[in-house]
Length: 241
Image (cartoon, rainbow, N blue to C red; front, side, top):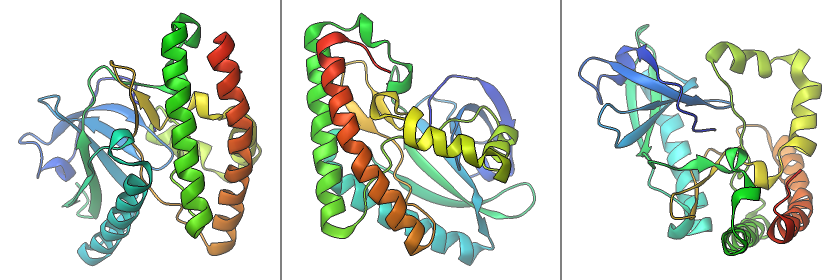
């Protein structure tokens, strides 16, 4: 998921528990999520359009997401994580949806949008230290139980683009993006705050079968070693592929 201020108003009854006029600004989109900002600028509201159905279905999905979010936040610790709260609400079509509410990090931006050449040596060293620590914690979780948080993420500019990118014809692109394009220094899910702190904002689990999960996490485990090297290069030169 990526935070890019797009300021596109969106009206939907799904926002009723959080907004009086049911209208919020869309500020970003990800692989499975549409992201909005509350009117007072205090919160991010993420709508899981691929989850839900009736109330019981949405409640089960919310509980699964909550359990995963707690595990991944515990993995990274409070210094790299933020609170996540889940709400069930019906959209305009009467479908129960899962909403995720998080604090809005004013001024934060994804690593994918960071120009590393503008950072000082001390800033790059501080960033590299945080990234190595995050990698270490994710690897510890993987070695313990075969899971790890998604530190990378993917963006979409609209619902239509998200559906297109998730379609079968885009499989080669998704594989190239997964294996090559999305290194940790181009993360969409890690935001750098105004005081140069890193925060993970996506705590969704991989929602596929056991074989897919094992393959996904195994490849990510190997790619972390590539990212270790890229972090060292960034620290010394400011260059990022």
